[in-house]
Image (cartoon, rainbow, N blue to C red; front, side, top):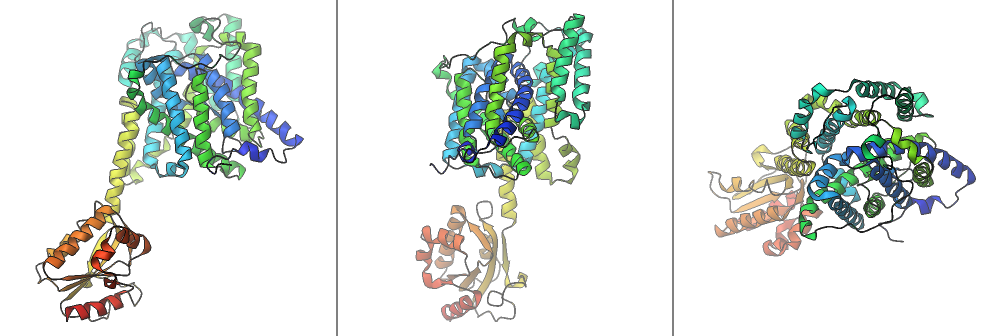
Length: 553
């Protein structure tokens, strides 16, 4: 089997028992009921229809379970995609969104094949926390209309400022029955006891009671049926089809597709890590990326939304007793079964109740504790976090992620460069091993010795110039100790070559002492070892000083 693609379903079915099956069925049915409500709410929040959210939960959830690198992860539509989905749909239409989702699926598979699963952990936490909090604010802004029952007939803009402006203009049109239903549902979900939620989730209770209350009392509250029509929830899955699209616009979809792929990879792998901690298991990150790619391609072909691993649904799956990916398959089949049997009833669900569900999702995903901890963070991390947060809200999540990543990378380079030190004998550290230390040793006449420490990379490559700018007479031989040089890149190699040429131009010699494997391989591959001469690479400072005494004589 391919080393980068090892679905856990194939592994767990070996030795699969009847007890495992019944546990998976119970868990799958439970989380399927939860996912049905969330998928409808996410479909509406994504400026699509509840049916699109349901299709995504069924198709992507099924494919994720079959191919996943995690045993118990549940896949489907998530709130993280709402900003980018709304933006793409408004700019390129529904078919443009499907093409974007297809591209994201292909990118995810390529990431898995390239074994980039472990690379996701290198995305800085301030970037992830910043856009996550920004997404939460954006989601909340999309729910104000339905939560308060605002009477808005015009199309609400996708951008945050325009959206807030329209909402503010219509605050005097609050529909109090809708707002009352929404607030009651919100409080019911938030205050629902955790021990009860293990058996009956508060979300389901709120939807059932809210729907019953509106139906029995004939409250004038907008429902799925009144906004999207009586056939808003189809009784069957659509046939897969290739979207119609103006391919001249393809270049405009590449950046949002990369953003969707990045969000899907971050969220699914984070979900898998949390699931590992809850089940004492170990996921395969590259397989997980391939699974998310397949799920997104499948979802797009059926007309669905982008999908990824859903943390809340995965946690509910585990708490309900799931043991294998079969639970994820049952979860998808449960949603499909409910749609086939009870689709007409879904039209009675009040939109204000679904908005309350997403307000709770937004509050839970924001990780607001980070704002209280900002005063304890390094200033550079605070800047990255706040900039990513603000850009996610005010511009576009694609821009926010790009700017956040670039800024975090620049600050990382700066920090790395600050670890690079060049010390002379007069500034030496005293904790080297005897054969590497300059302490107590006589430096031969015409010889100068220095220690280069840290990472000698771009951003720090000008350190060597300080030696040549010193007012003292140029030494005939310079010994450069690299005992604590951890890494060397092409810029550092180029700086060493320039340094050597400058010394040689004035009749001097250079000796390298105690270089580690990675820097030595970089020097060797770059031709510097041959250029300097292997005899001028010494194992320790003692040997280097003896060699320098010979050359300086």
